[in-house]
Length: 253
Image (cartoon, rainbow, N blue to C red; front, side, top):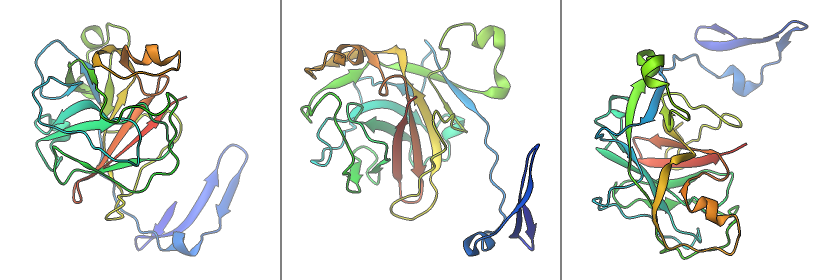
């Protein structure tokens, strides 16, 4: 790409066989150069040490999951992310409780308004949601045991000490590892691009501690034992700190 006076003036596609100038559309010509803030990958690593951020729940929170007739299964508390951990110091409040209806299926973002951080509300109108385990009690319980997280920058990893076990990280922050394709949402309230908070992965280490959910589907039992995002996917979490809207999407292979 070439910029003159901060405006895009040329795009050239180059590989081993081609050297082609791309015709700019009017919207492309209005694109202005800007510097993105550099982000560093941080790994969210399960630890036995006490931590501020963790997957699951500890039974002490006053957080209430969203209730809406737009989604006909219950939301689960997936994790708590603390602003006291340096990579999350930009969050607009002390603790972000990540919640998602993991027994639903949609390729779209689900947006929640966290203006009240302990009682977020569903926004938008969702039409393309299916229920692979059929519709469930929206007041049903499905809780994950607390798994503490150590937040370690990629530059601080010591291979001998930190990587010496299988499935060694439960998620990342800084830069998402997309399973399918990049999909950065715009806030439905402000129209601004949302900031990446973290990505949480399917993990056999995070066990279900309590559940009263039932399904006639045979394969429900494997989902009733540990944290799964569909088969073996990841949950991607984005936030617009001005509007306090959080967007969630799952990608899987």
